[in-house]
Image: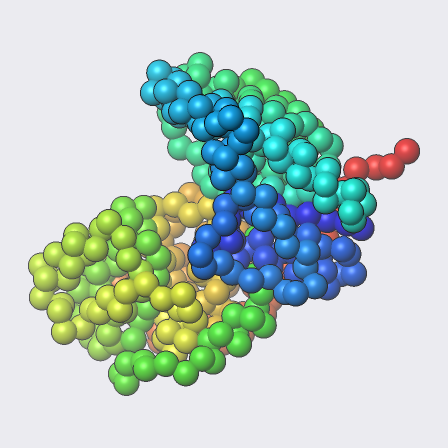
Length: 387
C-alpha cells in the first residue's frame, strides 16, 4: 500500500513526533510511506530516510501567488475573520485546498495513487477542508469544551467533519466529538478510536543520553507552563507531602510558558525554593524521566497523555489526577490505582504511596500504543474497498 501521513509542520512537538512515528510504522510494515507537511521551519524533526518527505508550504504558496491574488485573499480572510470570529480557516481553506490538490496530484503522478491519506490535527485539515476524498482520515487529537455551541460553531463543525472518516485518539476525545456531532447534527462516514503510537525503542535510546542530573532522588513533571497543566496543584501537593508525609525527594518541572511566574510565586509562597526546580524546556526530557523515581501529571484534561507513555517507556512509574480525556485509556488495571482526585492532600498521599510500592514492568500497559498496532488499525478500518 501507498500511505501518506499529513501534518501542519515538523517542529519539535508531540503531534509532529506522532506523525513521524506513524509514518515509520507504515514503512516497517512494508508499505510505501510518505510524510507531507505544510509549513517549513528552520528546525524540524527528521523522519527515517526511507520515508518520502514532501514540503507543500501552502501558506507561502498562497502569499506568493500570481499577481498577488493569494496575498489579497489572505487579507480578505483576515478581514472576514474579524466579522465572523474564528472563520479564517473557512476562507483561507477555499484558496489553499486547490493548491494542496494540485501538489498531491503531482506526487501521485510520480509515485502512483495513495491508498490512504491521514491528516493529523485540526489545524492541518482546516487548511484543506473543501476537499472530499474517501481516502482521507481526519485524526481528532483534542477534547472540545464549549457549552455555548451556537449556529456559527455548528456550521464550522459541519464544514470540517460532515461525511468524513474520523479517528479519535482516546475515549474522552471520541465522546467529546460525538457530543459536538449531536449538537451540530451532522453524520460522518466512520468514526473509530485509534490511539497515538509511541516509539518505545527510540524513547529508550534518547533516555540514555548523558546529561547532568540531580544527585539526589527526585520526582518529575513536564509540559507547557499553561493553566491546563495545573502545576500549582502539584506544588501544593508536594508541599503537603514534605510537611506531613516525610517526603524527601526534590521536585523538577520541565517546561516553559506563560504561567512560569505564577508557578514561581507558588514555589515561593510555600517556601520551597530549595526543593522545587524549573530547569526549563528541553527537546529531550527522557534522561530526566529515566532517572526520576516518579512522574506526576496534574492536567485538567488531556487528549491522550503521551507524556505518561513516555515516562513508562523510560521505566518510570506514574501518578495522575483524574481528568477528562485519555488518562484512563492509559492507566488501566493495577495502574488505575495510581489515579487520584485533583486535590493537594489526595495527590500527596498518592505520590508517597506509589513511591513506596512502585510498578516495575510497564510492557503490558504500553503494548496497545506500539506503532505497528496503531498503523494496522488505520489500515484495517479506513482502507477504501476496491471494486
